[in-house]
Amino acid sequence: MQSGVQRNWTDATAFYAERDHRTQLEVNGLHRYVSMPVEIWVDRSLANDITIQRITLVAANLTARWSRNVRVVVPDVALAEPLQIHGDKTLASRIKREMLEADPFGNFTITHTLEFDPASIRLYVGSCKSQAFMVTANDYLVDAAGWTALGRRGTIEDTYQRSSSTAPVAALAGAIGAADLFKRAIGQGVEHWLGDVNWCMWHNVMESAVSRCGAPAYGSSVAELGELLVAGVGAVGSAFLFILSLMPIRGRITAFDRDFVDASNLNRSPLFTATDAAVSRAKSEVALDLLRRCGIEGKAVQGTWTAFGELLGRKNFDLWVSLTNEDGAWADVPFQLPPVVLHGTTTSGWGIGFGRHVPRVEDCTLCRLPRPRAEFRGPCAEGDIAPPENSQPIRASLPFLSTVSASLIAAEVLKLEFPEIISLPNAVYADFRYGLPIVLSSLLGPTSGCPGCQITNSSLWIHRRGLSRHVSLSNAKHTSREQNVTFPDRSENVGSDLRIHGD
Image (cartoon, rainbow, N blue to C red; front, side):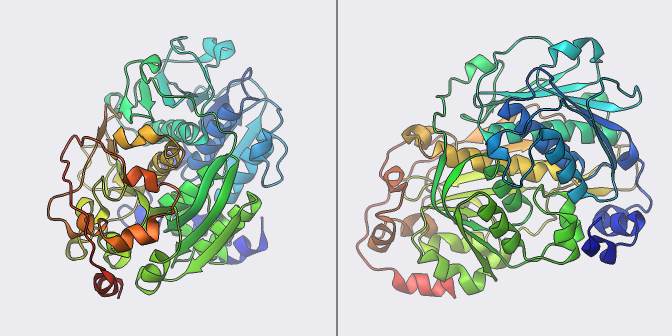
Protein backbone atom coordinates (compact mmCIF):
# COMPACT_ATOMS: atom_id res chain seq x y z
CA MET A 1 0.00 0.00 0.00
CA GLN A 2 1.38 3.43 -0.92
CA SER A 3 2.66 5.61 1.89
CA GLY A 4 0.27 8.50 1.14
CA VAL A 5 -2.70 6.19 1.58
CA GLN A 6 -1.32 4.83 4.85
CA ARG A 7 -0.82 8.34 6.22
CA ASN A 8 -4.38 9.35 5.47
CA TRP A 9 -6.21 6.16 6.42
CA THR A 10 -4.65 3.91 9.00
CA ASP A 11 -7.12 1.12 8.33
CA ALA A 12 -10.04 0.12 6.14
CA THR A 13 -12.62 1.48 8.57
CA ALA A 14 -11.19 4.99 8.34
CA PHE A 15 -11.01 4.82 4.55
CA TYR A 16 -14.58 3.62 4.04
CA ALA A 17 -15.93 6.05 6.62
CA GLU A 18 -14.63 8.93 4.48
CA ARG A 19 -15.29 7.44 1.05
CA ASP A 20 -18.83 6.31 1.86
CA HIS A 21 -19.80 9.20 4.12
CA ARG A 22 -22.78 10.18 1.96
CA THR A 23 -24.40 6.86 2.75
CA GLN A 24 -23.41 6.89 6.41
CA LEU A 25 -24.94 10.33 6.91
CA GLU A 26 -28.33 8.77 6.16
CA VAL A 27 -28.08 5.37 7.84
CA ASN A 28 -25.13 4.48 10.05
CA GLY A 29 -23.66 1.06 9.43
CA LEU A 30 -25.33 0.48 6.07
CA HIS A 31 -22.65 -1.83 4.65
CA ARG A 32 -24.43 -5.09 4.09
CA TYR A 33 -24.35 -4.73 0.33
CA VAL A 34 -20.67 -3.81 0.03
CA SER A 35 -19.44 -7.21 1.28
CA MET A 36 -21.64 -9.40 -0.89
CA PRO A 37 -19.39 -11.62 -3.07
CA VAL A 38 -19.27 -10.43 -6.68
CA GLU A 39 -17.82 -12.28 -9.66
CA ILE A 40 -16.98 -10.98 -13.13
CA TRP A 41 -16.36 -13.68 -15.74
CA VAL A 42 -14.55 -12.87 -18.98
CA ASP A 43 -15.24 -14.88 -22.15
CA ARG A 44 -12.24 -17.19 -22.53
CA SER A 45 -12.46 -17.36 -26.31
CA LEU A 46 -12.75 -13.60 -26.76
CA ALA A 47 -10.48 -12.30 -24.00
CA ASN A 48 -7.92 -11.06 -26.55
CA ASP A 49 -10.52 -8.86 -28.22
CA ILE A 50 -10.03 -5.18 -27.35
CA THR A 51 -13.80 -4.60 -27.03
CA ILE A 52 -14.08 -7.37 -24.44
CA GLN A 53 -11.05 -5.96 -22.61
CA ARG A 54 -12.51 -2.46 -22.54
CA ILE A 55 -15.85 -3.71 -21.21
CA THR A 56 -14.07 -5.75 -18.53
CA LEU A 57 -11.86 -2.87 -17.39
CA VAL A 58 -14.81 -0.50 -17.00
CA ALA A 59 -17.05 -3.05 -15.26
CA ALA A 60 -14.32 -4.14 -12.81
CA ASN A 61 -13.17 -0.58 -12.11
CA LEU A 62 -16.68 0.70 -11.36
CA THR A 63 -17.58 -2.34 -9.27
CA ALA A 64 -14.48 -1.82 -7.11
CA ARG A 65 -15.81 1.67 -6.36
CA TRP A 66 -18.48 0.22 -4.08
CA SER A 67 -17.93 -3.55 -3.63
CA ARG A 68 -15.19 -4.76 -1.28
CA ASN A 69 -15.34 -8.40 -2.30
CA VAL A 70 -14.78 -8.97 -6.04
CA ARG A 71 -13.39 -11.95 -7.89
CA VAL A 72 -12.54 -11.60 -11.60
CA VAL A 73 -12.18 -14.80 -13.62
CA VAL A 74 -10.07 -13.94 -16.66
CA PRO A 75 -7.70 -15.92 -18.94
CA ASP A 76 -4.01 -15.07 -18.91
CA VAL A 77 -3.94 -12.91 -22.05
CA ALA A 78 -1.89 -9.96 -23.23
CA LEU A 79 -3.39 -6.52 -22.86
CA ALA A 80 -4.27 -4.90 -26.20
CA GLU A 81 -1.59 -2.38 -27.15
CA PRO A 82 -3.79 0.75 -27.00
CA LEU A 83 -4.62 -0.17 -23.39
CA GLN A 84 -0.97 -0.37 -22.26
CA ILE A 85 -0.52 3.36 -21.58
CA HIS A 86 0.14 2.70 -17.87
CA GLY A 87 2.73 0.00 -18.54
CA ASP A 88 0.50 -3.01 -17.86
CA LYS A 89 1.20 -5.95 -20.17
CA THR A 90 -1.65 -8.33 -19.32
CA LEU A 91 -5.37 -7.81 -18.91
CA ALA A 92 -5.26 -9.34 -15.43
CA SER A 93 -2.52 -6.96 -14.23
CA ARG A 94 -4.39 -3.84 -15.32
CA ILE A 95 -7.65 -5.05 -13.79
CA LYS A 96 -6.02 -5.71 -10.43
CA ARG A 97 -4.02 -2.47 -10.41
CA GLU A 98 -7.08 -0.32 -11.10
CA MET A 99 -9.21 -2.08 -8.52
CA LEU A 100 -6.58 -1.68 -5.80
CA GLU A 101 -5.97 1.93 -6.76
CA ALA A 102 -9.70 2.55 -6.31
CA ASP A 103 -9.80 0.70 -2.98
CA PRO A 104 -6.47 -0.37 -1.43
CA PHE A 105 -8.33 -2.23 1.35
CA GLY A 106 -10.61 -4.30 -0.90
CA ASN A 107 -10.64 -8.08 -1.16
CA PHE A 108 -9.96 -8.37 -4.90
CA THR A 109 -8.96 -11.64 -6.54
CA ILE A 110 -7.90 -12.25 -10.13
CA THR A 111 -7.97 -15.91 -11.12
CA HIS A 112 -7.94 -18.22 -14.15
CA THR A 113 -9.76 -21.01 -12.31
CA LEU A 114 -13.22 -21.92 -13.60
CA GLU A 115 -14.92 -22.18 -10.24
CA PHE A 116 -17.63 -19.99 -8.83
CA ASP A 117 -19.19 -19.27 -5.47
CA PRO A 118 -22.92 -20.18 -5.52
CA ALA A 119 -23.55 -17.32 -3.09
CA SER A 120 -22.07 -14.69 -5.39
CA ILE A 121 -23.77 -12.44 -7.93
CA ARG A 122 -22.19 -12.79 -11.38
CA LEU A 123 -21.60 -10.71 -14.47
CA TYR A 124 -20.39 -12.27 -17.73
CA VAL A 125 -18.48 -10.26 -20.35
CA GLY A 126 -18.91 -11.61 -23.88
CA SER A 127 -21.08 -14.50 -25.06
CA CYS A 128 -19.23 -16.96 -22.77
CA LYS A 129 -20.60 -19.89 -24.78
CA SER A 130 -18.04 -22.28 -23.36
CA GLN A 131 -19.29 -21.43 -19.85
CA ALA A 132 -22.98 -21.45 -20.79
CA PHE A 133 -23.62 -24.44 -18.54
CA MET A 134 -22.63 -22.28 -15.54
CA VAL A 135 -24.97 -19.39 -16.24
CA THR A 136 -28.01 -19.16 -13.96
CA ALA A 137 -31.28 -17.33 -14.48
CA ASN A 138 -30.11 -14.44 -12.29
CA ASP A 139 -26.74 -13.86 -13.97
CA TYR A 140 -26.23 -11.01 -16.43
CA LEU A 141 -24.19 -10.78 -19.64
CA VAL A 142 -22.86 -7.67 -21.40
CA ASP A 143 -21.23 -7.25 -24.79
CA ALA A 144 -21.01 -4.73 -27.64
CA ALA A 145 -21.63 -4.98 -31.36
CA GLY A 146 -20.98 -2.02 -33.65
CA TRP A 147 -22.65 1.04 -32.10
CA THR A 148 -24.84 -1.10 -29.83
CA ALA A 149 -24.25 -1.86 -26.14
CA LEU A 150 -25.84 -5.18 -25.17
CA GLY A 151 -27.20 -6.72 -22.01
CA ARG A 152 -28.81 -10.14 -21.49
CA ARG A 153 -30.31 -11.89 -18.46
CA GLY A 154 -29.98 -15.60 -17.75
CA THR A 155 -29.64 -18.20 -20.50
CA ILE A 156 -27.16 -17.24 -23.21
CA GLU A 157 -28.62 -17.22 -26.70
CA ASP A 158 -26.78 -16.44 -29.90
CA THR A 159 -29.17 -13.70 -30.99
CA TYR A 160 -26.64 -11.14 -32.25
CA GLN A 161 -23.62 -10.98 -34.51
CA ARG A 162 -20.54 -9.57 -32.82
CA SER A 163 -18.74 -6.80 -34.70
CA SER A 164 -16.04 -4.24 -33.93
CA SER A 165 -17.09 -1.58 -31.42
CA THR A 166 -15.63 1.71 -30.30
CA ALA A 167 -14.41 2.49 -26.78
CA PRO A 168 -17.52 4.56 -25.84
CA VAL A 169 -19.85 1.69 -26.76
CA ALA A 170 -17.72 -0.76 -24.76
CA ALA A 171 -17.67 1.67 -21.81
CA LEU A 172 -21.46 1.90 -21.86
CA ALA A 173 -21.73 -1.90 -21.86
CA GLY A 174 -19.31 -2.12 -18.92
CA ALA A 175 -21.24 0.54 -16.99
CA ILE A 176 -24.52 -1.28 -17.65
CA GLY A 177 -22.96 -4.47 -16.27
CA ALA A 178 -21.73 -2.64 -13.17
CA ALA A 179 -25.21 -1.14 -12.73
CA ASP A 180 -26.86 -4.55 -12.76
CA LEU A 181 -24.41 -5.91 -10.16
CA PHE A 182 -25.15 -2.92 -7.95
CA LYS A 183 -28.92 -3.25 -8.29
CA ARG A 184 -28.82 -6.93 -7.33
CA ALA A 185 -26.39 -6.38 -4.47
CA ILE A 186 -28.54 -3.75 -2.75
CA GLY A 187 -31.55 -6.05 -2.85
CA GLN A 188 -33.75 -4.44 -5.49
CA GLY A 189 -36.67 -6.58 -6.55
CA VAL A 190 -36.26 -8.78 -9.61
CA GLU A 191 -38.75 -6.64 -11.49
CA HIS A 192 -36.30 -3.72 -11.28
CA TRP A 193 -33.23 -5.60 -12.53
CA LEU A 194 -31.94 -4.87 -16.00
CA GLY A 195 -33.44 -6.94 -18.78
CA ASP A 196 -32.45 -7.29 -22.43
CA VAL A 197 -30.65 -4.16 -23.60
CA ASN A 198 -29.88 -3.15 -27.20
CA TRP A 199 -28.82 0.49 -26.72
CA CYS A 200 -27.96 1.86 -30.16
CA MET A 201 -25.59 4.77 -29.46
CA TRP A 202 -25.88 6.04 -33.02
CA HIS A 203 -29.59 6.89 -32.73
CA ASN A 204 -29.62 6.67 -28.90
CA VAL A 205 -32.69 4.47 -28.80
CA MET A 206 -33.42 1.05 -27.38
CA GLU A 207 -33.75 -1.27 -30.38
CA SER A 208 -35.60 -4.57 -30.42
CA ALA A 209 -32.61 -6.18 -32.18
CA VAL A 210 -28.98 -5.27 -32.85
CA SER A 211 -29.43 -5.50 -36.61
CA ARG A 212 -32.00 -2.67 -36.56
CA CYS A 213 -29.48 0.00 -35.47
CA GLY A 214 -28.40 0.64 -39.06
CA ALA A 215 -25.40 2.78 -38.05
CA PRO A 216 -22.36 3.25 -40.30
CA ALA A 217 -19.07 1.62 -39.35
CA TYR A 218 -16.51 3.74 -37.56
CA GLY A 219 -13.41 3.06 -39.61
CA SER A 220 -10.86 5.48 -38.10
CA SER A 221 -7.97 3.86 -36.26
CA VAL A 222 -7.26 7.11 -34.36
CA ALA A 223 -9.92 9.46 -32.99
CA GLU A 224 -9.24 13.03 -34.13
CA LEU A 225 -10.17 15.44 -31.33
CA GLY A 226 -8.82 18.71 -32.65
CA GLU A 227 -8.69 21.46 -30.00
CA LEU A 228 -10.88 20.22 -27.13
CA LEU A 229 -11.89 21.98 -23.92
CA VAL A 230 -13.06 19.79 -21.05
CA ALA A 231 -14.62 22.26 -18.61
CA GLY A 232 -15.09 20.25 -15.43
CA VAL A 233 -13.08 17.17 -14.46
CA GLY A 234 -15.48 15.87 -11.84
CA ALA A 235 -17.40 12.59 -11.96
CA VAL A 236 -18.54 12.86 -15.59
CA GLY A 237 -15.49 14.74 -16.88
CA SER A 238 -12.96 12.32 -15.39
CA ALA A 239 -14.97 9.36 -16.71
CA PHE A 240 -15.01 10.99 -20.16
CA LEU A 241 -11.21 11.31 -20.16
CA PHE A 242 -10.88 7.74 -18.90
CA ILE A 243 -12.96 6.53 -21.86
CA LEU A 244 -10.89 8.58 -24.32
CA SER A 245 -7.76 6.95 -22.91
CA LEU A 246 -9.10 3.52 -23.92
CA MET A 247 -8.57 4.33 -27.61
CA PRO A 248 -5.87 5.93 -29.76
CA ILE A 249 -6.51 9.68 -29.86
CA ARG A 250 -4.92 12.69 -31.49
CA GLY A 251 -5.37 16.37 -30.69
CA ARG A 252 -4.92 18.85 -27.86
CA ILE A 253 -7.01 18.91 -24.69
CA THR A 254 -7.36 21.64 -22.07
CA ALA A 255 -8.70 20.28 -18.77
CA PHE A 256 -10.30 22.93 -16.57
CA ASP A 257 -11.46 22.47 -12.96
CA ARG A 258 -11.26 24.27 -9.64
CA ASP A 259 -11.43 21.28 -7.27
CA PHE A 260 -9.09 18.75 -5.70
CA VAL A 261 -9.61 15.00 -5.39
CA ASP A 262 -11.02 13.77 -2.09
CA ALA A 263 -12.11 10.34 -0.91
CA SER A 264 -15.77 10.89 -1.80
CA ASN A 265 -14.75 11.22 -5.47
CA LEU A 266 -13.56 7.61 -5.45
CA ASN A 267 -17.16 6.35 -5.41
CA ARG A 268 -18.05 7.50 -8.89
CA SER A 269 -14.96 8.25 -11.01
CA PRO A 270 -13.05 5.47 -12.82
CA LEU A 271 -10.02 7.76 -13.09
CA PHE A 272 -9.25 9.00 -9.57
CA THR A 273 -7.22 6.82 -7.21
CA ALA A 274 -6.88 6.60 -3.44
CA THR A 275 -3.41 8.12 -3.78
CA ASP A 276 -4.89 11.12 -5.63
CA ALA A 277 -7.31 11.60 -2.74
CA ALA A 278 -4.63 11.08 -0.09
CA VAL A 279 -2.50 13.93 -1.42
CA SER A 280 -5.45 16.07 -2.62
CA ARG A 281 -4.23 16.30 -6.21
CA ALA A 282 -5.86 18.90 -8.40
CA LYS A 283 -8.35 17.19 -10.69
CA SER A 284 -6.98 19.07 -13.68
CA GLU A 285 -3.48 17.77 -12.90
CA VAL A 286 -4.73 14.18 -12.73
CA ALA A 287 -6.30 14.75 -16.14
CA LEU A 288 -3.05 16.19 -17.51
CA ASP A 289 -1.08 13.17 -16.32
CA LEU A 290 -3.48 10.86 -18.15
CA LEU A 291 -3.24 12.90 -21.35
CA ARG A 292 0.55 12.68 -21.26
CA ARG A 293 0.32 8.92 -20.98
CA CYS A 294 -1.89 8.95 -24.07
CA GLY A 295 0.87 10.80 -25.91
CA ILE A 296 -1.13 13.92 -26.70
CA GLU A 297 -0.63 17.54 -25.79
CA GLY A 298 -2.60 18.68 -22.78
CA LYS A 299 -2.99 21.72 -20.56
CA ALA A 300 -4.35 21.99 -17.03
CA VAL A 301 -6.23 25.11 -15.92
CA GLN A 302 -6.97 25.42 -12.21
CA GLY A 303 -9.65 27.90 -11.24
CA THR A 304 -13.28 28.96 -11.48
CA TRP A 305 -15.50 29.58 -14.47
CA THR A 306 -16.00 33.17 -13.28
CA ALA A 307 -12.26 33.77 -13.52
CA PHE A 308 -11.52 31.89 -16.75
CA GLY A 309 -14.80 31.63 -18.70
CA GLU A 310 -14.32 34.65 -20.95
CA LEU A 311 -10.62 33.89 -21.51
CA LEU A 312 -11.37 30.31 -22.54
CA GLY A 313 -14.14 31.58 -24.80
CA ARG A 314 -11.57 33.53 -26.81
CA LYS A 315 -9.40 30.47 -27.49
CA ASN A 316 -9.62 28.62 -30.78
CA PHE A 317 -11.29 25.45 -29.54
CA ASP A 318 -13.13 23.14 -31.93
CA LEU A 319 -15.31 21.59 -29.24
CA TRP A 320 -16.33 22.28 -25.65
CA VAL A 321 -17.31 19.52 -23.28
CA SER A 322 -19.10 21.66 -20.72
CA LEU A 323 -19.54 19.88 -17.39
CA THR A 324 -19.34 22.64 -14.82
CA ASN A 325 -22.32 24.69 -13.70
CA GLU A 326 -20.72 26.59 -10.86
CA ASP A 327 -21.89 30.21 -10.86
CA GLY A 328 -24.54 29.30 -13.43
CA ALA A 329 -21.94 28.53 -16.09
CA TRP A 330 -24.35 26.72 -18.43
CA ALA A 331 -26.50 29.84 -18.71
CA ASP A 332 -23.39 31.89 -19.44
CA VAL A 333 -21.80 29.54 -22.01
CA PRO A 334 -23.63 30.80 -25.15
CA PHE A 335 -22.44 34.35 -24.53
CA GLN A 336 -18.82 33.20 -24.70
CA LEU A 337 -19.59 32.28 -28.34
CA PRO A 338 -18.49 28.64 -28.09
CA PRO A 339 -18.11 26.14 -30.94
CA VAL A 340 -20.07 22.88 -30.70
CA VAL A 341 -20.89 22.16 -27.03
CA LEU A 342 -21.48 18.71 -25.50
CA HIS A 343 -22.70 18.26 -21.94
CA GLY A 344 -23.59 15.37 -19.67
CA THR A 345 -25.34 15.18 -16.32
CA THR A 346 -26.48 12.80 -13.62
CA THR A 347 -29.60 13.42 -11.59
CA SER A 348 -30.14 13.21 -7.84
CA GLY A 349 -31.92 9.93 -8.52
CA TRP A 350 -30.97 7.15 -10.94
CA GLY A 351 -31.02 9.20 -14.13
CA ILE A 352 -28.56 10.55 -16.68
CA GLY A 353 -28.76 13.18 -19.36
CA PHE A 354 -26.76 14.15 -22.43
CA GLY A 355 -26.91 17.16 -24.72
CA ARG A 356 -25.36 18.37 -27.97
CA HIS A 357 -25.53 22.02 -28.98
CA VAL A 358 -24.49 22.98 -32.51
CA PRO A 359 -24.60 26.78 -32.73
CA ARG A 360 -27.14 28.32 -35.11
CA VAL A 361 -29.08 25.10 -35.79
CA GLU A 362 -29.70 23.60 -32.33
CA ASP A 363 -30.73 24.88 -28.93
CA CYS A 364 -28.14 26.26 -26.52
CA THR A 365 -27.26 25.49 -22.90
CA LEU A 366 -29.08 28.62 -21.73
CA CYS A 367 -32.49 27.39 -22.92
CA ARG A 368 -31.81 23.68 -22.28
CA LEU A 369 -30.40 23.93 -18.73
CA PRO A 370 -31.29 25.93 -15.61
CA ARG A 371 -30.63 29.64 -15.34
CA PRO A 372 -28.40 30.95 -12.51
CA ARG A 373 -31.41 31.76 -10.32
CA ALA A 374 -32.64 28.18 -10.66
CA GLU A 375 -29.27 26.49 -10.74
CA PHE A 376 -29.35 22.74 -10.18
CA ARG A 377 -26.87 21.89 -7.45
CA GLY A 378 -28.09 18.42 -6.57
CA PRO A 379 -25.67 15.68 -5.52
CA CYS A 380 -23.78 14.07 -8.38
CA ALA A 381 -24.50 10.46 -9.34
CA GLU A 382 -26.57 9.64 -6.30
CA GLY A 383 -29.74 7.70 -5.78
CA ASP A 384 -32.12 6.30 -3.21
CA ILE A 385 -31.01 2.70 -2.68
CA ALA A 386 -33.53 1.82 0.01
CA PRO A 387 -36.16 -0.82 -0.75
CA PRO A 388 -39.58 0.87 -1.16
CA GLU A 389 -40.86 -0.48 2.14
CA ASN A 390 -37.97 1.09 4.07
CA SER A 391 -39.32 4.17 5.81
CA GLN A 392 -35.92 5.84 6.13
CA PRO A 393 -34.38 7.18 2.88
CA ILE A 394 -30.88 6.01 2.05
CA ARG A 395 -28.59 7.94 -0.29
CA ALA A 396 -25.54 6.44 -1.96
CA SER A 397 -23.18 7.28 -4.78
CA LEU A 398 -24.04 5.40 -7.93
CA PRO A 399 -20.70 5.07 -9.72
CA PHE A 400 -22.05 3.74 -13.00
CA LEU A 401 -24.19 6.81 -13.74
CA SER A 402 -21.29 9.17 -14.40
CA THR A 403 -19.66 6.72 -16.79
CA VAL A 404 -22.93 6.16 -18.67
CA SER A 405 -23.26 9.90 -19.22
CA ALA A 406 -19.58 10.18 -20.15
CA SER A 407 -19.86 7.36 -22.68
CA LEU A 408 -22.60 9.28 -24.51
CA ILE A 409 -20.33 12.32 -24.72
CA ALA A 410 -17.39 10.24 -25.96
CA ALA A 411 -19.57 8.56 -28.59
CA GLU A 412 -20.76 11.96 -29.79
CA VAL A 413 -17.16 13.13 -30.22
CA LEU A 414 -16.67 10.27 -32.67
CA LYS A 415 -20.02 10.91 -34.38
CA LEU A 416 -19.06 14.54 -35.07
CA GLU A 417 -16.95 13.21 -37.94
CA PHE A 418 -20.17 12.18 -39.73
CA PRO A 419 -22.12 15.02 -41.44
CA GLU A 420 -25.42 13.22 -40.81
CA ILE A 421 -25.01 13.79 -37.07
CA ILE A 422 -27.07 16.95 -37.45
CA SER A 423 -30.16 14.80 -38.03
CA LEU A 424 -29.52 12.58 -34.99
CA PRO A 425 -30.95 13.23 -31.50
CA ASN A 426 -29.19 15.91 -29.45
CA ALA A 427 -31.05 15.37 -26.16
CA VAL A 428 -30.88 11.96 -24.45
CA TYR A 429 -32.23 10.81 -21.08
CA ALA A 430 -32.34 7.45 -19.32
CA ASP A 431 -33.25 6.19 -15.87
CA PHE A 432 -31.81 3.07 -14.28
CA ARG A 433 -34.13 2.86 -11.29
CA TYR A 434 -36.66 0.49 -12.85
CA GLY A 435 -34.54 -1.62 -15.17
CA LEU A 436 -33.81 0.78 -18.05
CA PRO A 437 -36.95 0.04 -20.09
CA ILE A 438 -36.39 2.89 -22.54
CA VAL A 439 -33.97 5.57 -23.71
CA LEU A 440 -35.65 8.92 -24.40
CA SER A 441 -34.13 10.98 -27.20
CA SER A 442 -35.18 14.03 -29.20
CA LEU A 443 -33.79 16.61 -31.61
CA LEU A 444 -34.13 20.19 -30.38
CA GLY A 445 -33.76 23.29 -32.53
CA PRO A 446 -33.18 26.90 -31.44
CA THR A 447 -35.68 28.37 -28.99
CA SER A 448 -37.65 31.37 -30.18
CA GLY A 449 -36.66 34.46 -28.22
CA CYS A 450 -33.68 32.85 -26.47
CA PRO A 451 -30.79 35.36 -26.46
CA GLY A 452 -28.27 32.51 -26.27
CA CYS A 453 -29.61 31.00 -29.49
CA GLN A 454 -29.81 34.41 -31.19
CA ILE A 455 -26.28 35.51 -30.37
CA THR A 456 -24.74 32.76 -32.51
CA ASN A 457 -26.06 34.56 -35.62
CA SER A 458 -23.79 37.52 -34.90
CA SER A 459 -20.82 38.44 -37.03
CA LEU A 460 -18.53 38.03 -34.00
CA TRP A 461 -19.50 34.36 -33.61
CA ILE A 462 -18.82 33.82 -37.29
CA HIS A 463 -15.46 35.60 -36.96
CA ARG A 464 -14.38 33.53 -33.95
CA ARG A 465 -15.63 30.13 -35.11
CA GLY A 466 -15.23 30.42 -38.86
CA LEU A 467 -12.22 28.08 -38.92
CA SER A 468 -13.23 25.66 -36.16
CA ARG A 469 -13.24 21.99 -37.02
CA HIS A 470 -17.00 21.47 -36.97
CA VAL A 471 -18.20 24.86 -38.24
CA SER A 472 -19.81 23.24 -41.31
CA LEU A 473 -22.42 21.69 -38.99
CA SER A 474 -23.61 25.19 -38.09
CA ASN A 475 -24.36 25.84 -41.76
CA ALA A 476 -26.36 22.63 -42.14
CA LYS A 477 -30.12 22.39 -42.23
CA HIS A 478 -32.26 19.96 -40.27
CA THR A 479 -35.82 19.57 -39.15
CA SER A 480 -36.19 19.58 -35.39
CA ARG A 481 -38.60 17.18 -33.74
CA GLU A 482 -39.48 19.86 -31.22
CA GLN A 483 -39.00 23.27 -32.77
CA ASN A 484 -36.99 24.74 -35.61
CA VAL A 485 -36.61 28.49 -35.44
CA THR A 486 -34.49 30.32 -38.02
CA PHE A 487 -32.92 33.62 -37.01
CA PRO A 488 -31.73 36.17 -39.57
CA ASP A 489 -28.01 36.93 -39.69
CA ARG A 490 -27.09 39.91 -37.52
CA SER A 491 -24.27 42.24 -38.43
CA GLU A 492 -23.86 44.15 -35.19
CA ASN A 493 -20.88 43.48 -32.92
CA VAL A 494 -21.95 41.91 -29.61
CA GLY A 495 -18.79 42.65 -27.70
CA SER A 496 -20.72 44.51 -25.00
CA ASP A 497 -22.93 41.44 -24.40
CA LEU A 498 -19.83 39.29 -24.13
CA ARG A 499 -18.26 41.51 -21.48
CA ILE A 500 -21.44 41.69 -19.41
CA HIS A 501 -21.97 37.94 -19.30
CA GLY A 502 -18.29 37.16 -18.92
CA ASP A 503 -17.85 39.23 -15.77
